[in-house]
Image 1: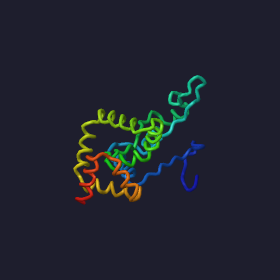
Image 2 (image 1 turned 90 degrees about the vertical axis):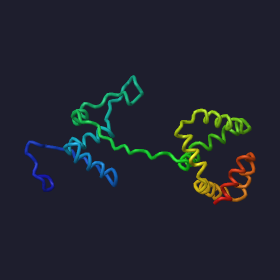
Image 3 (image 1 turned 45 degrees about the vertical axis):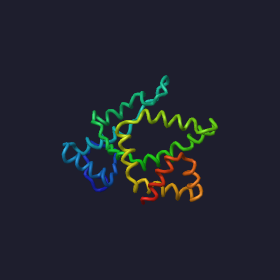
Image 4 (image 1 turned 135 degrees about the vertical axis):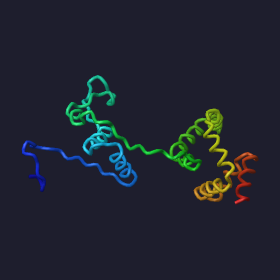
Length: 189
């Protein structure tokens, strides 16, 4: 007997596996178990198969994805179906795109601007990027362009980050058409 459980006398050892799920994923799991007709053990093996693999290192191939899986692991999984909990990514917004650019791209753009000594490379990238826009991206940009309250929120955030003086300098570094648009936003808010 092991910690209060009756164990078949033929079983000499076992391994315990736990999966902890919270909130939406826990609800997802319950739906899968209830409606997709999985046995609990089969389900857990499927989750493990999708997330963990034990591989035998290759002497000739450095790509770990091409290494063979350990036989004991494959035997344990017993041809279980992979079960993943991929969450649907929300549609990107102009605000989330701005935050991503700030985190991932700004230092590279600054490096390029310094390397070329001008805004030339940034302007080139903008021209090149506009050529590649999808219809969905154009639609999202136009919707944001026409939503003055959303633009005002982003401008206020930028102003808080830069401070008043740097914000004004940034606005006056823009061409007249863009300055007029920003002025229209701030007057109408």
